[in-house]
Length: 89
Image (cartoon, rainbow, N blue to C red):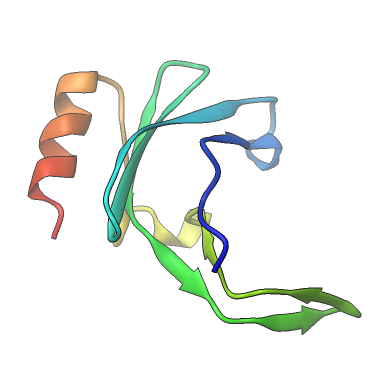
């Protein structure tokens, strides 16, 4: 299975931002974005699939917009992010 990368390009949020892995376990991760915000989330696994003729293996995926507030959160401070990460089951 493909794991999340240490640095992820997040162009989809409207401006160029990169997220760098801070800490992770098998079930959760915390990234710091290049704009200073932290994203904390439960790691999701997408099954192997073919989309528009392109094949993708089973892989960990970064959260989508709909995940925020349920299995992903954004924090403005490292302290708040680490607290959220610690309490995430």
